[in-house]
Length: 101
Length: 198
Image (cartoon, rainbow over all chains, first blue to last red; front, top):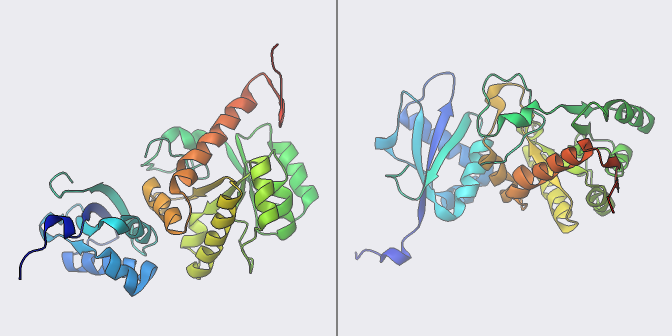
């Protein structure tokens, strides 16, 4: 199938998050924590809108930091979900490109 | 976010990040009272000493009295332990008139077993406060470092509930700080009264 032109593709934001838990979390656990946090706050519809996607090569297990790609229009919803998460998750930084994160 | 102030966090926290440290050096006093006479007495006792005077809302009559009292700076969680949001159009109008900010307490929301109900009340209150242009702020009321939240995250939460995050974390606290400076100046005589040179 032919690729969509750049103007029609979904815009993303990359958010760097820091998970502060008693025990260090693995990548797959971090994925579950983020997804459940969004689902808890925004529901399944919200999860579909935010489209959180953890980037594996940017996951820092020692510092418990991860880069999450989210839909640009729903960055605010993502941040609000992280605030009310059961685990303490702090958003450290946000950028339009992964390189500058 | 520069210029973010959270007035009601414990000043002895070991780790304060995300906002200016001077905000926690302000002397903020949170009053509790069960009747108007008690609250009035506490306001008289503390107004001279405290930079920021807040009242823990929840009682319908005291919420009304608190927003009618210009010596108070903040009315915290008027919806606490109530079946309704604790505010109506009359109270919102009075809050705007006397510049008593309505405090949204994040710790109350976070530790509540029914977050949906608290957020329902917040949404309703924010809608009213926006309509009457009344001030509102959000506070973490953190007593330990892990209870702190980043200002942009708190602003996002307010945005999601239909309000203005910037207003809650930046504009209203800045105005409260301006009022403190005015109050401490030598020209200030009382709420709404000021000495002006010819």
